[in-house]
Image 1 (tube, protein in one colour):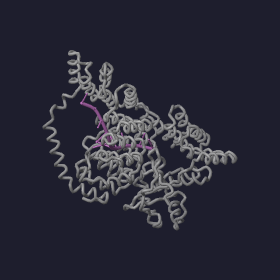
Image 2 (cartoon, rainbow, N blue to C red):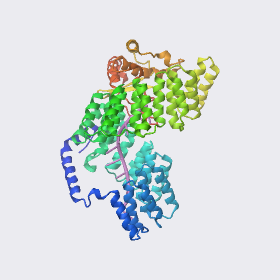
Image 3 (cartoon, protein in one colour):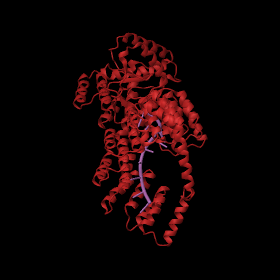
Image 4 (cartoon, rainbow, N blue to C red):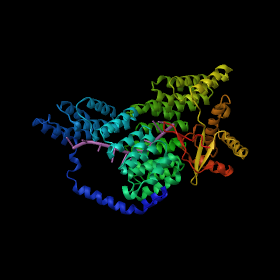
Length: 606
DNA sequence: TTAGGGTTAG
């Protein structure tokens, strides 16, 4: 069947869903009936008993026999047992090395797997396709591009570029390292492909924020050759829909998920909850979530984060309580969501109590990301000194510090704390992070005290360093069309009408207790910075003006520079779109630029 | 005897 569109592909899938499900059931029963060993035998005690037998018969120096045991312990995540057996092997072969490497990845220590690979390369044992796949997998987990490229080179050297599994793992590795073009080159070079390689490539696009490209690739996926999309692929497609903010595609994908019988699948449900939250339909999030019989930590976290986006911090806290009552253990990301929710709903005391309890009650040690949320929380309510002290007390790597000090910079700018903003900017410049914002901030700080020479000097330094400020923009999809809004764009012939509406909305917002204002956000009227702030204000203020937020002052609904769109903005933009000219409607959204960190912006579109 | 794809934050 010829498929020409995403919709076509999904409709085809829906039509064949029943046949496919029947097939799956048959396969499942046949697998169960013909299974040689019941799964219960594959546990630690059975491994231990084999271990004892090998020990008694002095076979622990026999490579093949011991490999079985290493592999079994590795799969059971009993890595210390596997390691001891390996260390005692007089002649470990490629299987011994690969099994142990895979074992270390399985217990969340991929760096040890790569270290073992290095040791193996220095020994007389040569890697095979299994070893290189495992090594590429370790690089994926670590997002280690440098080592990943080395593994790719070894794939070429050992003549394994034609191996389907090896190449799929390379596609995945490049995708996880955010080198999506490289992933595509490997994908295109593959003469053999299957559903896994296609899923890897679709996922690479979706996870790099290139949702449109992911969906385009999905259009090309040929069901008749590779079979119907499975739950892996559908989860990625749903993720691609949220990444592109495409509600229309998301709903169609949801239809396919239901008909394939995956709607209560934990992982897919998490992706659906996330998609509806990002596309502005929180009611749907709840519907999807409540259909899951026993939600794991993933859907709970998606819901907590979704509620946080809508300023429903109390709901996020209730969900945390609910999951704990049901015996679901929150993880580090759950707490990020909770702290984010507290920060955006002004629940500072709750947030601080949660931070305190993370380690004590749940055994999760807060890291730089959690502290960044707390700095954000304190910064939003103007407790800049506390936020600054906290930021200073945390030891961070430059990448982690970019977010931490960038957050502090935004908060100090918002509250007019020039001295803290200057400290934050200096940290960022010294660490070579977020240079444009830091330079502009420092320049503004000098300008504020009349030091124009230094203010100008910093601008010149910024130019010399090749640092440019991205132009802020927002976009929203309505009826399958994408509407773009640029900061400070004066080309709209009815801009006065639009600005009048914004003014009116701002007035309404003030009545609701909003204390901020343009003067509080921008110290000196600097073109680039002013543009960015105005855009962020548009979305935030519009959302607040519609009275959809529970605690307006702290709710931020930034849609600038990313694709997270809230329901309130959606409504607001619907109204605005009625008064702006058609030239603001953009049909081709394939030219999105993407930042390395996964956030997404559109530049130079016009 | 050893290998690949999906979800949650900012």
